[in-house]
Structure formats: structure tokens, C-alpha cells
Amino acid sequence: MKAQSALRHDFASDNRAGLTPEVIDWLGRAASGFCGAYGSDFLTARAADLIRALLDADAEVFFAMTGTAANSIALAALCRPFESIIAHRNAHIVVDETGAPGFFGHGVGFVQVDGASGRIEPGTLAQALHSSESPHQQSPGVLALSNATEFGTVYTAHEIEMLTGMAKAERVATFLDGARLANAAASGFNLKRLPSLAIDIAVLGGSKAGMPATEAIVLFDRSLARRFLPRLKQSGQLAAKSRYCAAPWIAMLESGRWLDRARHANAMARRLAAAIPFEVVHPVEANTVYARMSEEAYQRLSGLGWVALRMGADTVRFMCSWATTSGGVDELVEVLKTCR
View 1: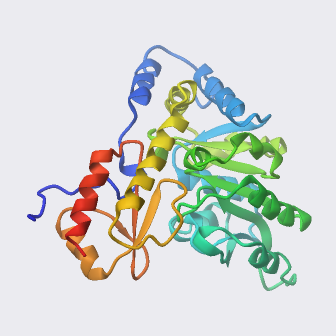
View 2 (view 1 turned 90 degrees about the horizontal axis):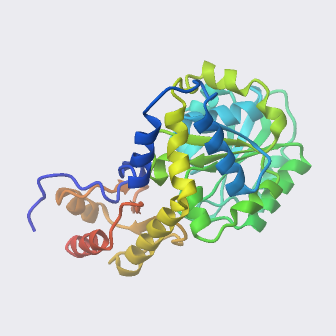
């Protein structure tokens, strides 16, 4: 098979897919006329109301332009500089955000813990929470969870409740990275349980769901909202034309497509996992497939123009998105058969 002239990014990451048609339509609607700036406009208020309704939560909602900033600003609001963040050692905030949580948090550190397929296990969390207080170490200030996880697995509400309950018992704050929360919800996670799970702040992902640069920061603990807009402004994340951060959420939530598109992405991942000619190494519960591939097989795939991410010595990640098609999955499977 000849190498393709153009790279195929179909399965590299869901943030490489374009914008959904409904988002493009709503951005056009938002482009006309005049309205308030810096979050004071009616579209931002409308989007926040839709998110509160989605979660059935009496929460404060703000918008940021990147997931890294949203996560880091939220963590900085929960964790003091002399404290640390408990997170899975493979969490996005640990391995993929270039130290941003520490930068925004003026020196906050990490306590990295283990757990199968990206989920923190109660035993390892207990050890981290009960480590002795010392003036020479950063004691835990916040527990950070991800749903779906970096490996595409999904916590149940009961599992989250158990972990956050352990944290709260030690007066440790709680944070949820929901960059792919839509995919977790499409897998069966009940979003309306979130307000009862002792989570202080959650970030809902827009970019990976088919929107442009917009993430929603949801403060379940409303006392944290005081001076949150100045925090966003100082961090360069308070958009003057905030309506463009809000309009995509209106498009996706009013239409129900935020979840519908995620269901499609999850279905494409299951289709790929069922046919891929390599061992699948993590449960496929959202829109991610991890396959065990030798370096030789990976290089063959890359040589044929397909972009996928090497994750560790012998594992490759394939990510499905709202734009993934069944034909694209089948084409990839046929190519992978030639790489064995």
C-alpha cells in the first residue's frame, strides 16, 4: 500500500476534529449586533443557565478559552501554594499541561497516585490523604479526578462519591476534570448526580466535544465565586467578546447535540475496538481505544500517513470524535491489518 500524500488526523485526538454544524450556525448568529462584554452579555447568561439545567445544579458558571487554563485556574482557587494536588499519575493535569497548575497556583505540587486504567483506587488515595503533616512537604489540598479518564474509562457516581467523601473527611477540596464529561455521560454517567457528589469545582469540556476554544468552569461551591472574574481576567482568560465562548454551548445544549455527538464518538470507539487487529489494553467505556502495538507496527502505520499517539513503550491511542465515521473506522482497520 502506498503512503498517503496527506496526513490523516482522524484518530489522533478529538480536539483535531472541526466544529459541529450547529456550533458554526450559532457562531454566525452571535456575530451580529452589539452586546455586553467580559461575561456581561445575555448569551453568556443563557449558556450558564443551560449548564445549570444540564446538571440540575445551583452553581456559578464561568467560561475559559482553554482546558489547561480552566483546570489550572480552578485548582488554584482550591489549593494554596504550600499544598499539593492528589491526582492519578497519568492524569492530563500531571503529564500534559506543562506545569500550568503549579504556575497558576504559584507553586502547588502534585501527589501522584496509581489506579488501574486511569481511575484512582481508594487504597492509594487513603495513603496519600493520611501521609503525615510535615513542614518540609506540601500536604494535600485538593483531590483531582477525571471523567472520562485519560485511558477512556468512566467512573460511576458511586466511585466518585467514595473518593470525594474520603477527601472531604480530611478537609481536602475536590475537583473534576470533565474535558470528556460528555463522553462519560454518553456512557451512562448521570450528570444530575454531580451536585450531590461533594465536588467543589468541575470543568466541562467544549473543545473536545466539537466546539471552538471554550470550556465551562462550574463552581458547585458558590462561595468560591467571589472575585472569580478578576482571577480569570488576570489569567488572560476573560474574553472581551465572551459571547463567542457562550454561543457554542447554547448550540450544543439547546439542541441536545452535546450528548448526541458524544454517543456517536463512543459508538465509533466500540466499533474500532471490536475490529482492531491488535490487543485492546483498557476497557473501552468512552471514545478512546488503546491498543498494544510494537514500534515496528506503529512506524508502518505512520508511514502510511495515519497519525496516532504513542502512549508508553508499546501502546498506541486511537481517539474517536463527533466527526468520526463508520467508513473511517473500517478504513483504519484495513490499514492496521497491513501493519501487523
